[in-house]
Amino acid sequence: MVPLFQEKTGVTGPYVFLVSISSFLISKEYYVMEHEYYSGLSIIIVLYYVATRLGSQIGNMIDKEVDKYELVVNSNREGQKKVLEDTIALENKLQESMAGQLMLQDAKKENVHLQLEAVFRERLLAVYKDVKRRLDFQISKVLIEKKFYHRNLIQWVVTQVIASYTAEQEIKTIDNCLDHLANLSANLKT
Image 1 (cartoon, one colour):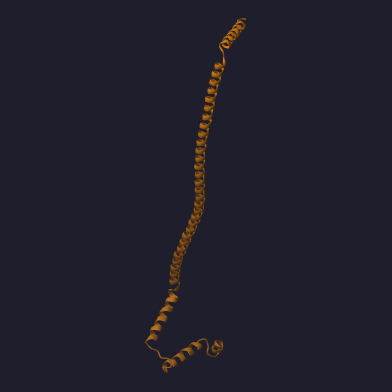
Image 2 (image 1 turned 90 degrees about the vertical axis):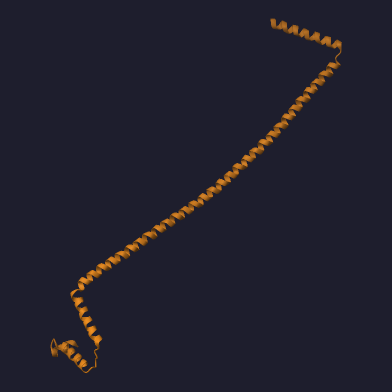
């Protein structure tokens, strides 16, 4: 539609039309302008001036600030990420340590079992030594009794044999012993 409008009125035709319509609306007070309108108009002019003249400088400054802010946020995020990674590594170490604690607890239980086994064996050895001592006592007692009985039996037999000897048998036995001794001494000299 604008190209058709430009063919009839020229290049400045749309602008003149716009100004004339706005002038008509303002003059007939179809469009009422209060004091805020002028404030808005001045703000728009200042913003247009700032955007056209200082826009690139302000954009660069804002981009630098955004980059700084982004760097701070990223560094904070990286710091938090590092802290969380360290926390995870510490947790893994603690879990490994806990597994080590379980192994240590098992080793302590095994140590207690070994100590109980050692005490049991010591008591068993003490019982063995006590029983052996008692049995040795019984054996020595039996041996002493046997020796005592044997000696008494020998003495009894000797006394009975001596009592059963007569004087004539005694003289005969002594003579016989002397003959044996004489034969033995003769054999030794030769």
